[in-house]
Length: 274
Image 1: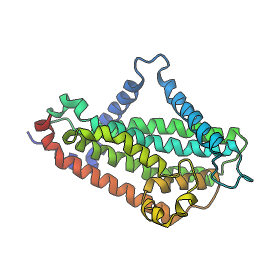
Image 2: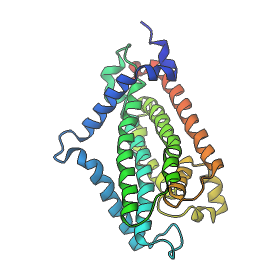
Image 3: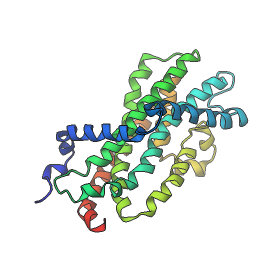
């Protein structure tokens, strides 16, 4: 029996949305199952992360994104928190995806099971955590006395959609490659650190632009552009840079198409390797 031909198209995923939803819920529940605080860790983890990084980069190093005359330490903390929240989506995708198919080897030999659902379900559970982090970051921005514009809030989903597509594409790509290259899972924490420190999460993008050589390399990082756009448009009420936004969409769409294509190409060999 051959796999369902519809699985070779994105429309196949749409037709399996009920299964995708079930596995997404299962991924969320399994993440916190057995812990005393349960889903409260979805709130505590980002808050504790903020406390650590703010102490280091805000207090010890005196970091800022804009002029200290218009940006307080609290402003810096919340702007950094927004960047950290977005980064956490990528970091957890990089960490979990390479082991996803290996950890579900029992499903690989079930020919009728659409394996492409697994990476997408894992990504969906991380989107849930992203939503909680965003609520915390934006609420904190309001609590410290700043305002949010309606236009900025409306643009937030538009800015985040490419990041969501990027995470889905990476999940498919790394889940497939992780079956054949087991060292990939060990390398991903290091890769995540590179992404974090090269994406202006803790410092203004102008720091990178001051080095022409460095900027020529890092300007192609779509996550860097997403972080900067989110801060500028959502928190600071600046107009959206359409060329930069367009680039993030191109990168997100490319990630989905390439990641899914590689996953489907390598899928027939999963059972032999496992």
